[in-house]
Length: 208
Image 1 (cartoon, rainbow, N blue to C red):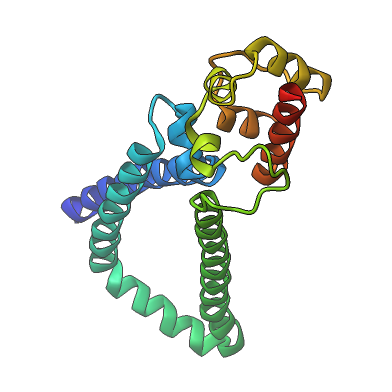
Image 2: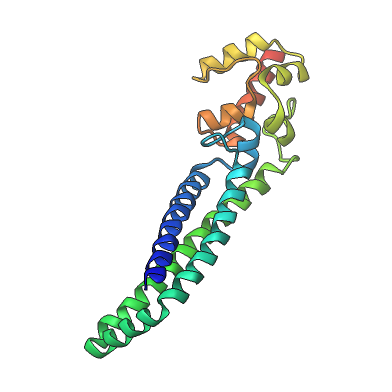
């Protein structure tokens, strides 16, 4: 009896620790920027980048599967007795107690699918290097938007870095020469196409 109680206590404690870890990493991954932006701006949470958080979250998930299995194995008899007792006393409440968690899981899965689907669509739009440009004289590719700094963009189109920064400042965007375009996009919560069109217009103006 003592061994059983000790084992249950240890399993419950480990489940609590793993649950907290999964909750923290899950929230961090939900709030994290998309993968390519996270890599470009060096985003971290508690000293871990997005890939590390994903690995930790996955490993903790597998650990929780094992712990839940042990937990169910230890308490299966008690669970079965309680379920039978619940069905005898009130079948409606017992059925509701089983259906509601299933519905919550289904809703959560749908929300997760919608979120990941939206992120994949974002990746596809970021990987489109040959969009139609609104300015025929200046064309900024998707690669430039992802990897170039303000200075590199200015040098690419042979315009003054200071002038480019000044024009961005006039539009309410504070930037430094070594700041990446994707960092500006993320910092000011801008649409990539909107920022690209703005930069093309500014560079075209600077080039006369």
